[in-house]
Structures are given as structure tokens and as C-alpha cells.
Amino acid sequence: VYYSQQIPPPKMLAFLAAAATAWGKPAPAPPPPPPPGMPTSFIVCTVMWFIHGFVLDVVVIGVLPFLSASASDAQRADKFPWALGGYSGFAKVPNLAPTHRRFIAENAAYALLRIAPAFFIQNVEVLLLAVISYWIEGVTIAWEISCYKAPAGSMVPQTLMAVFASIVTYTVTNNAGGYIPNVDASLLTAMQGFCAATWGCWLVGALSTATAKEDGHRV
Image (cartoon, rainbow, N blue to C red):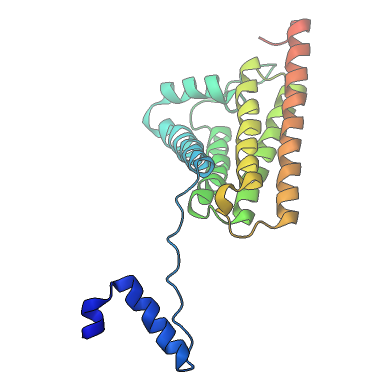
């Protein structure tokens, strides 16, 4: 009672630790430091995954077609022309036709890969899968542009895939504040490779778009 009344709490703990050590007992372990706040780069990724993985891949692509066919067609024409067709000899695909339904299913799978990182943000394997998903979509968009003369607006999602891959790759490479406890070097190298490959897809799409414009084949 005397010590507890006379000695401030921090000094009391030091006294007890010294006393315990003096009697041959280990001193109590210090309390763990509070976890650091999420660095800005990881916050940016989280917002990006919510907008792209949920708002775009789920709401705009998966839900809107059931609410408004005209609004869905407008979104396909503006953002996903390959899901609408109507160019280079391809017939226009009606709302919720089989091809459109498969497009919805495809993006539901993309959404899973792009929402999961928000919940497993310190898991490099999950983040790598998200970057691979950007590369896969980048490949398909570049293919559509270069081989089937998709409209020039296709370069918008083509660019976004490369930007999204870059944001995630930069975040993991920089790993501000050591927020990810253990970044496997081989997984990071793979992520950087897929990011570079996604920019390669962008280059293919950009060159094909520029060439087609010069030849007057794309509208």
C-alpha cells in the first residue's frame, strides 16, 4: 500500500520489474505497441477496389441491366463496347442476351478478385491475383482493339487496367511503414512483371487505335 501511494505508476512498474529480476524471475514483457494506421497508399487502393470491384463490376455491370435496359446499353456503349457489339460487322447485342449475360458473369468473377484485397490487404498473394486480373482484362481489351477494331473509347478501360495494376504494384513495392509484415520477394517480382505486361497490352491497344484512326477504319 505504501509503495502504491508514494510511487507514480510508471516508476512502480519499473520497481516491480527490478524486484522480480532481483528474485530471479523474468521481468514482465512490455505491452505491444499500438498498430499503426493504414498508410495513404493502402487507403487509395481500398477506395479503388471499392469503386472498381463493387460499383463498376457489380452495380453498373451486374445490377443495372436488370433495372434499365437503356441505361445499361448506354454504359456498355461508353465503357464496354465489346459487350454491346455493333462494330466491324458484329451485330449489336441486346440487353441481357446470352452474350451480355456471360459478360455479367465474367465481371462477377473479376469483382471477386478486386474486392477481396480490401479484406486481405496485407496478403501479397491476394494482391498479386488482383494485378493478374488487370493483366487478363488488359489482354482481352488489346485483342479486341487490335484484331476486331473495337471503338477508340476502348482505350479508356485499357488504360485503367494499367493504372490500377500500377497503383497496387507501387503500394506493395513501397510498403509504406512496413504495413505488410512480410513481402515475399518472388511474389513481388511476379507482380511487377504482370504490371509491366499490362502496360504492354496498353501499348498494343494504343498503337492499334492510332493506326486504325489513320486508316479511317475505326469510328
